Image (cartoon, rainbow, N blue to C red):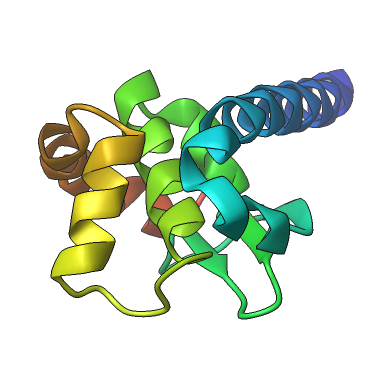
Length: 126
């Protein structure tokens, strides 16, 4: 079936676009972290069913490739959240303050993102 080939090509293109867009956004936000930005090592995309992103203690950020399907403020908030983990590996007040500093409108974007959580568990993900 030809449509499967088209769908696969579209998915590959979408992932490449997402990676470029997310990397550009990370580069724009990193200077606001100061010295903590030096901890950033790499970005990886993968399909995750329960999370929008993660950050390891050694500075490796993984973002859900389905973020490209949500409104821009939503994925920007996820990036701000994961970058804030470069400085704070918890979700306390200092972490929240930094995430809000990295992305104005952070709280509103998170509320909107909550409405998109069903995208993570959509059976058509493959």
